[in-house]
Image (cartoon, rainbow, N blue to C red; front, side, top):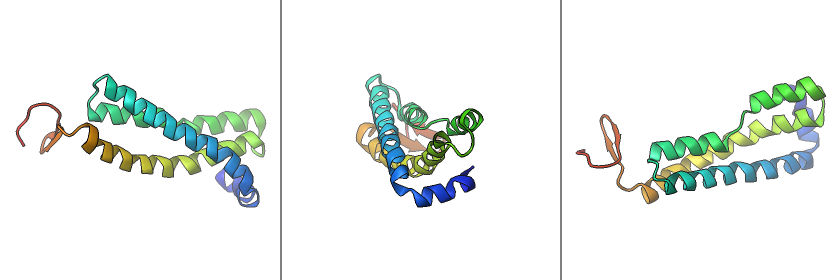
Length: 124
């Protein structure tokens, strides 16, 4: 699928941008909104980041399968589902760095121990 859409990605960078900008906004918005909702309801760091990454990512594998089955492999819908994973991976990697920074800022009481992370009272 990716190799079949590769020429189209190279030949139409504006189309890639038109698809990528809203997707990038979606990834960041969903991640940040979910992170702060989970933080406000007093979830611990592990729960907060897990639910944030789950909300911020998508099931592109399923989207690709549906787009190809319904619209065909050379459709614009299939093209959009190819751009998604190409954008999703670098965005989520950058959000890992945000999550690590937020851990220090919003969860300063979390302490690393040999058994894992302790969130309340623990001895290092």
